[in-house]
Length: 230
Image (cartoon, rainbow, N blue to C red; front, side):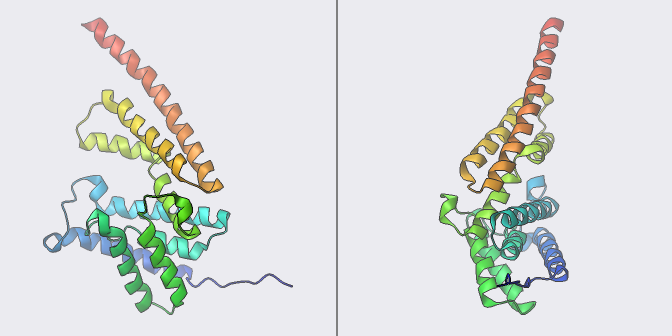
């Protein structure tokens, strides 16, 4: 018997249209300040940062899904919509709101199977689940693992250092801030379950450890110089 080939329900053109919709929705959330939007002066709360995070998660989640035998289409579409309501809804309900927006979009922009829409929306709804990742579907797990991994490694370190600038911190605080990224990575390793995500997490943590070791050495030298000058 031959291998059954399942056609993807989402074409590349349709996925690009979804990306544009998500981008525009986030921008509108920021502009619609009086109708529920919040101040976006902080980079984590900007439409640009949130959209880039979403694209990172979509790429990571798709990679993990393909490696782990999950439905890559469900996973990548769920990843694309998982934080769409982040800038307009309260944190504790943004997942449910994101699923609502995704369902409305998918049911009005194409002829997607109802089961596909249901699986996408279930993954979005469950992506904020704080329990064991073994308790959720493979597609939801891939999304959650990608969401965790985007905040660790070199990318997470860069974001933390950018945050320092906005908080007017000095370079002498950097070791502590990078330590937070390292702890976040170690926490992620404890949570992720797939072999693919575990491997990615360990590689990213190793980079942060190297950077932190170099930073500790240079900070120690600077502190010694300051003491000598005094």
